[in-house]
Length: 271
Image 1 (tube, rainbow, N blue to C red):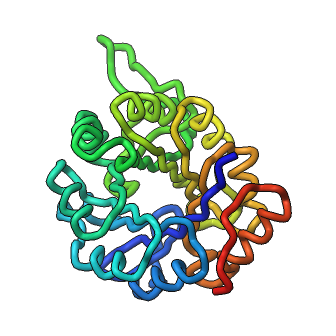
Image 2: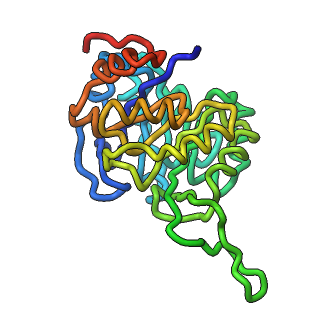
């Protein structure tokens, strides 16, 4: 059985790690390279670096920060935010990333996934999606005088959670995989930063729809939440930020909790 992965996330804004609630009310959480080094020592399985304002600000990802972070870790590093072309992906990989995550640019032009997979291999391409529950039917188009509404209970957002698309995340995940994405990173905007647990229905729906690893993101508040995302949500990995950044719990403690409950996990270091 494949081991499950624990992945701290560095959300970067202005060169600093930040954390908010449902993508707003950001607060400072530390210096990226220092936190990366800490998580590497503690036994994190991978690290995700997301430049969360690159797309909304229409700028490129901070290459210098990526280089500083990659110099501190010996575990796989995924970088996302503002990647719009194969050359952008190449720049991140040359700066030390092992994988690249695409979100807004892939929604705007799905062929970017296929181009990246062809150039670097599917194992390098992560399709990231920011997802929010739909409170009421969402009009996506009009056929004459009649509205055409989205049927899915969730919709995908772009530009750092600022723009709704009315895209069904399950269908989008299937399409992304068919184009060559090797992993799916699913962030629940509703649960993000609230520490009340992941959106298990969303995770299970996507995990059952695709045959590539799914990474759960948004909502971790205690070790039980991570366990639920891996077991009930059927995720292959769990991503968390605030519980690690603000030392609510450490990676070794999470791994011990999961191992005691029979989840296959790589042992942590002492920290």
